[in-house]
Image 1 (tube, rainbow, N blue to C red):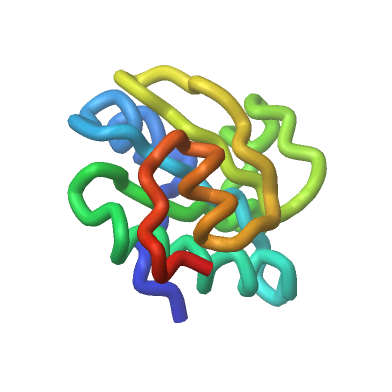
Image 2 (image 1 turned 30 degrees about the horizontal axis):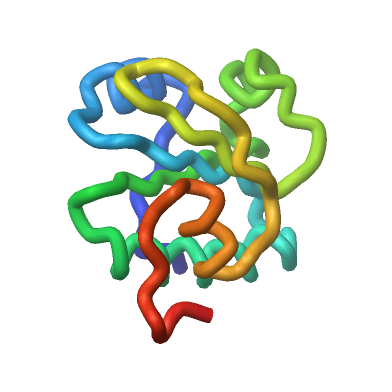
Length: 112
């Protein structure tokens, strides 16, 4: 079970627009092995970044509107939002170190 908050189609706009820090969204599907592996890395990223970054997830089996608007074609997918706007896709698979590098955040010596 994930420790990261879930966002739905219904609360997506509010979650992104009201965020006071960058938001990293993982689009995922239950039962997806790559999605689960990425979730483990994202939980490590969240522990390391603390309040500097908000990481949330969206289950694409239960939410269709936002993934369709974002043209999500493969899972998992990561998208970065800043100041209420989509900034870019980060990719879908990677280690904590790769994710931090892609976000332009410092990587500690213990990063994997």
